[in-house]
Image (tube, rainbow, N blue to C red; front, side):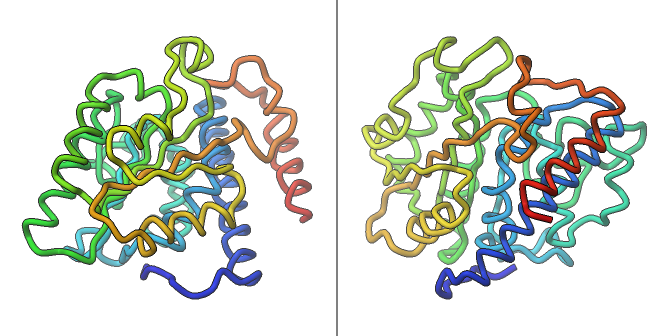
Length: 287
């Protein structure tokens, strides 16, 4: 895909809105194969992934190893549901392969791995490594003269508990990696509870700014605003700082009865609820 710098028209937003719908729909389809999964995170980040994969990142689905591609690193391997659904949306993998999710010999393991799936740039099992790897890629692109390419790194608020993330933030500023755009998914949830109760990291945007980053923040489920700020950070900032967009997302966004579940990090859904979830999602989109 080529970066779209055209005006953010209603037609363009409607295309992305429906892409986000299909990413959510397909994430539910995958999760139903196992009856459980990291569903809340996948549904919450679908708008951001639609904007990133469909509209912003320069990717050729026919050639996953294209040297001139933008690199999209999703640190959180457990967001595999959403990653695979986004890759289906751009034609990187076939839709019917989603029915093999997390089964033996599948190319779509529960935790996304670069060695298994075309279009997956990083094996994201251990959190806290993504921004470190993104630094190396962004620096390598610069030294190779790939000045038009961007390295995107999507990371979670839980990863901000890791000291390696902040070492990487400091390193990116030191090396003036203005071709690096970090996207922090703030859903305030991690395995052991609310992120800010486990380890207070707010103000996240303020902290990145203090480390020398050009920083923005928005509602991650406001698709128009996400597109606007991603374009601004890529094309509208005239300095040599790394860029960061903090997105506040709602877990299980789009399926109202899942949004209110007590256990939102890893979710089990009863067999009879999957069809209900798909119907609620359709209704949320007016379909």
